[in-house]
Image (cartoon, rainbow, N blue to C red):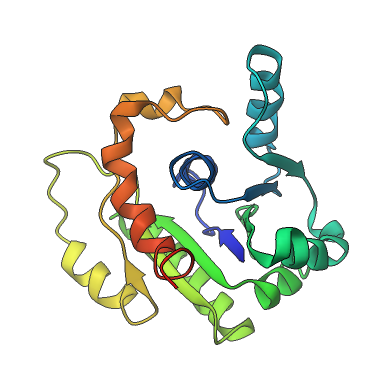
Length: 210
């Protein structure tokens, strides 16, 4: 299953969410996964290389790639491990590259992190409309990410109502300092009760509960 993790807005936690998802799939669910790091900063690849020096055998691969490389990767991702593997693609945060078109066309699922903030909401809607125009059948799941505890968001109800026209919304992932401790080898145990409900809602109907 090819899964995009993306949003046009930067700073919404795409890369962190990709690592959390891969850790959950491979460690909690023992399900094969690969991260394709297409973000310009290659932050996941850097984290992966650094962790390999300090840790033992990795649980999954992180593959650095560019949009130009994707047509060559596409069939490999779809057919690897009898089609059971989840490929998690961390997209660059922009929409003005035609290289995104084959990525959107081939993907089965979009995981879109967002925040309850007006500019982020507008960017999220624009990203969603573009993806749906290119691939009308793609499933989209929105993840409220880095949400501060006890914060009151006047636009929350309106944002949820608009996003639910395009897809589903998961439970909130709060803004917590221990997210800074995740690696491509480990998610802190304190975070499992936080992220498990999110990834169960995303992946359970599509993978192990078929």
